[in-house]
Length: 64
Image (cartoon, rainbow, N blue to C red):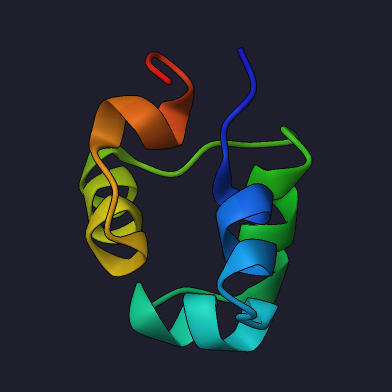
């Protein structure tokens, strides 16, 4: 399963810093999540989905 954080970030022309600030975390965390090295907590997944304007299921790759 591949999450869509990087895809959405690039489509929306957002920097790592912008996304990190929006969900109250560090740039490195966003980078690690994009590369699958770690995963955000459930509440952060939801913040990311809200930020990008997509469903949780879409963000985590469960639906198209």
